[in-house]
Image (tube, rainbow, N blue to C red):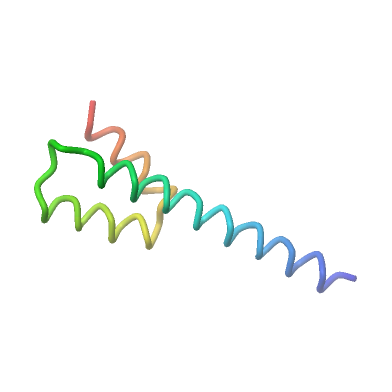
Length: 62
């Protein structure tokens, strides 16, 4: 039973990671103020640590 709880927690974290990465990837892709290199940098960061870089991206847009 403990394994099931651990695996379901890991699965939920993985799904949250994928959804946040997709949201950031889509937002960066639609941003017309960024150049191609900047977009690629933010997209790569979105795949690695989307939660951390999402707040950095938002702060840089202010």
